[in-house]
Image (cartoon, rainbow, N blue to C red; front, side, top):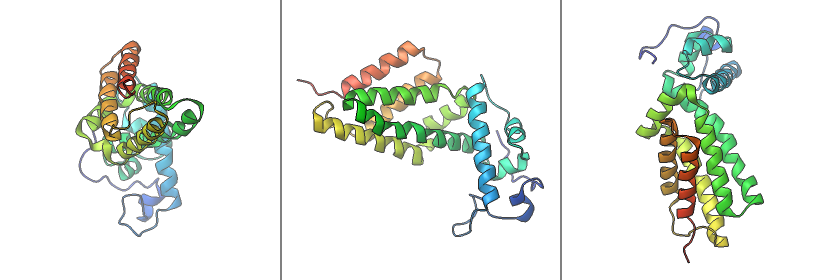
Amino acid sequence: MFASHSPAPDPTDPVDATGGADPAVPPGRPVRRDARRNREKLIAVAQAAFAAAEGPVPLEAIARAAGVGIGTLYRHFPTREDLVDAVYASELDAVTASAPELLAEHPADIALRAWAGRYAAFVATKRGMMDALRTALASGRIAAPSRERVTATVGTILERGAAAGTLRADVDPDDVATLLVGVFAAIMDGAPQERTDRLLDLLVDALRPRP
């Protein structure tokens, strides 16, 4: 876990060296291009490291692989949880973007099951960030814009399914998102793939209309 104090400026980072803007600066100040590039590089390196590792990844190793100093990493991500949130949000783009394609190919209930499976697979590959992700999900801190995006995607699928009669029309999308978090908690506790599949099958079956 990071220390709570601010690190010393990193002379290898143009932003640190000049006192320029970064994503944490007050609104209205421009974010320098080199600051954005460093942030994106850190997220990309962390994505690969979290997916490959069996346990927690040293943050110094992420900074080194990204070609920046640890001070730069601290500047962009003051805590490990901040970095986890950024990786989670970045990779969630691909998960949420897959929903329209699935809806174009399948009835909404089948599309929902396929989409939930992709989401679960995304969570399962994050072995190197499991502890931080588990804490963030349990506390609801990761909910902020990521939870809203998931809820919006679920809402789109439910709306399509309700119109076609393949999914119930009386379901709150946020309730479904909450149930998905429960399934992901089981994944992070080491549930086998078979159990994950059963849980997702049960979830989607509960959303289908009854005769």
